[in-house]
Length: 190
Image (cartoon, rainbow, N blue to C red; front, side):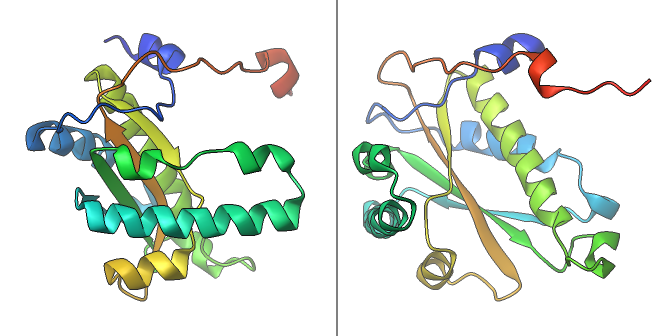
């Protein structure tokens, strides 16, 4: 698949078939993530591949609690109808963690290290595009309690779980979301 076609046609998939994803495809997707840029080539990411139904059930329960808290705090009624059931049905969940000690020069800034998160975001985007190019559905998910996930997956103290990349063969067509036009989102300073 041509790059710009992949960028313009990649959907977020939340409805997966039960079909397993072969290990070589998972590895290709992760390899695409590893090819992302990072500050000082620090490569701050690690990937935890989850297929265990028991672990997925724990991640689902945690997401349900986080969703309830977010609805209460935000008052966003639409969030009540947002289903996180795909955490139980996605054949594969890749938990992307970032090592905050591998952030680059920004660690000396007043706000502290954040570039490790940016690098992991680039890795996630590469993974989403690779999955799409391979015919695998994916979604980037962040509605979870980081401390709960760290404890569940025994993640080192210096690493932070930043996102889940849920993967599976799509059960149907995913809805295409609209994007605002370039002119509304860009300022050219010449």
